[in-house]
Length: 141
Image (tube, rainbow, N blue to C red):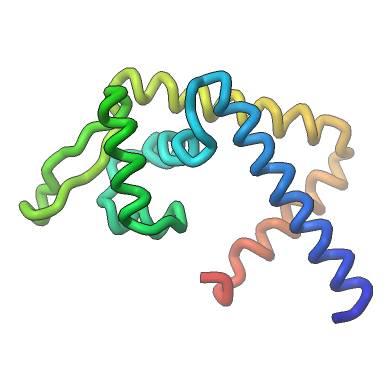
């Protein structure tokens, strides 16, 4: 690996850790683990089936089931019948889950806003372009 590639990879790994730390920092005061906060934020887009949630969150289905069980006991999510498959269920936010998900999302995005406030317009555009290129790469899917 070329030195330039090593520097790029190192920077991306450092960014990933920084963002994970932010998730932990912003979820803890809300009484959530980072993964629980992530799940609630994903569900802001609407109900998801367990298979789709497992894929989106990159976690095993058994781990997801345990997490959903814990959030369901806290009345933050609910299982709903899947209209397309009566054997399956979809996971949806409850009203209190929606409120907490909004708080988690706002806390996280506010912190990212603070971290990026010093970027110039040109730097912002460059970061947006680079992130779009990396995240749209089909080899990652």
